[in-house]
Amino acid sequence: MSSITNTSSFHNPKYAECIEACNHCANSCDYCGTLCLRDVNYTLLECVELCFYCADVCRSASKHMSRDSNRAKEFCDYCAKVCEDCSEECDEHDMDHCKQCAKVCRECSKICKEMVAKQRK
Image (tube, rainbow, N blue to C red; front, top):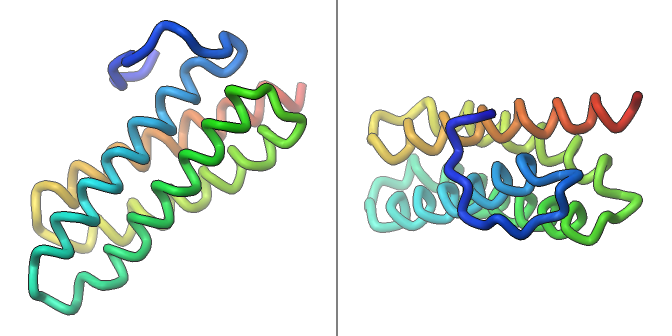
């Protein structure tokens, strides 16, 4: 089990860990993007954009899993890729919130990949 805190015990049990990871990642990305917006440094614009996009993709993947959609695997595969991109971007910055966001994105990507691999079997 990952270090992501379980915020709800009512999830589709088939995808519970991945739903939690995606929701946690979405919230982390929203927070990081918001803090980066408050910094007047224009070098953070790509970070802001990617964080908000990653949050949207994570929420979409979470919704597909919650609904047991036949497209959940495809959304999670894409989510893993976006989370990797976001983690790489956030790692380029020295702020603590960017480093934390990068860590959460990496973990979400890993969990999404694991879920996709399980569904392929």
